Image (cartoon, rainbow, N blue to C red; front, side, top):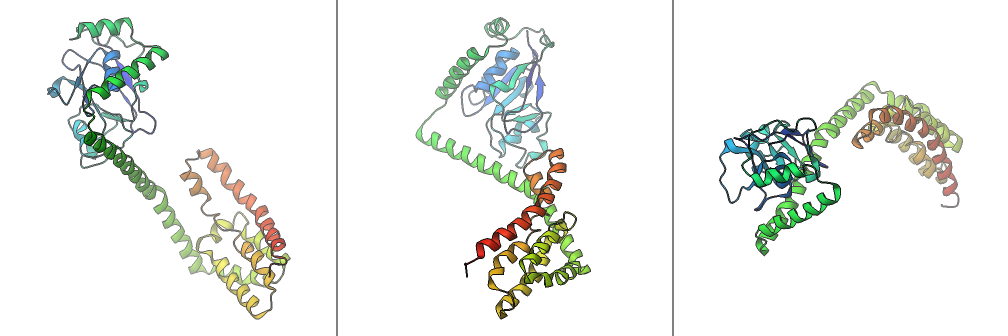
Length: 342
């Protein structure tokens, strides 16, 4: 008696998972993981009543393959079986890539799968009543359909040991396998970085470019900087500059392009050079004219940190309002620290 199983993605894996039900025609679990029966393939066979076979030693017709177990980090092999519409289970947490990436879809591919990610579908354990080809395996499955935690750990360790013994672990094989695993990890990291760049960084850069264009075209930055520049001659004036630059409705706009910092920084620098402003004001002025720094990046930073929408909604104004306090405090601390420095 065959049984329906659910296969979920593992930690860091890709896909939504799917269910499998062996039939008299399709009941072979093809293990293509460098030789031997992989523990994931063995687990699927035990729970479903199918038959696990070594893909490196046996040529199985496609119409008999229930699913394929692979360990590809993201090259051509990852898309071979999905292209043939054969459910593919990758034991490595990889994502669709390579020349056959368009064939890798959630209905036929899942990755990062471990034996613990495979379970029986409750209430649907008699989907197919055709006799299984392996009577001994059927009897074992019927007697012990779901292993308890301790037995499962012991059995998994035994299966994993047998799987390693079945593979030819020569020095060259070990070296090539290690290189392949490392390259798969780096390749996946590169894909994740590129995906983050396309989805988050580039749109943010476009947004900042637009803000800089608006600031330069309207001249709002120069107007504010010119208005605030007379305040740069005293510590109280610098605290006022820090307060104004950190206002929540201004700081995200003043951040791009650093117009305030550029204009007032040049004015203060020239005044310090000619002796009109004491040099001890140089450090507090640096903090005063940069109170708005990073305020435009807060929403993107929270998004990159995979913060929940509610966290972003609350976190952004919280950080912006706190900058009004910390900006002034930074100026005071910088002024105190600069006493006796010059």
